[in-house]
Image 1 (spheres, rainbow, N blue to C red):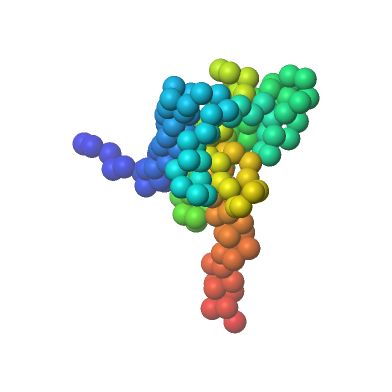
Image 2 (cartoon, rainbow, N blue to C red):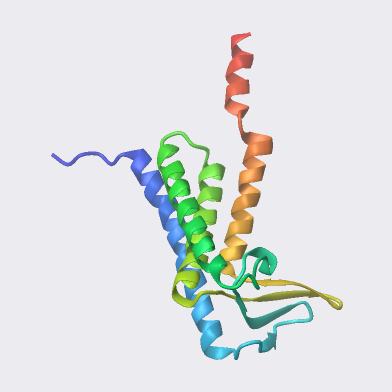
Amino acid sequence: MIPKSDPGNSRFVVWMAVALIVVVADQVTKRAIIEFIELYGRVPLNSVVNLTHQRNTGAAFSFLADAGGWQRWFFVALASLVSVVIGIWVWRIRYQGPAILAAGLALVLGGAVGNLIDRILHGYVTDFIQVWFGDWAFPSFNVADAAITVGAALLIIESLFLSGRDAAKSSDREV
């Protein structure tokens, strides 16, 4: 007799696949940038977006980039811890967790692991998307950073607008 698939485990696998797709896309694009664009080189895509090749030894917006090297292992430890916590969180909500919450967590997890790989292998993160508005440039970022940003936005939306909605509906029915 063939056992039926567990829907909770299937959901978990789907969200981990989303995270893995982010990691693969991030690593493939970074490898292409390293291969085809010289360090600090720039390839304009249009008047707003450039592909560039940057190395970020810090965190977001190059925070702690000039800290002397200890930040590499701090960020490795932090990203590792966050990744484990998110993986456990997605496992725990696999049966009833809202899809928007799981999607946000999967995107953050994929982005964290993508940048973690860079830190472990190179000691820095490769950034390559540069957005310009007139003479002002937004700090360069990568696929992992974009996934973390979108994932965080989903988590905020879920928290502010959707979290507790089911509990409110059920309490309205009881009145």
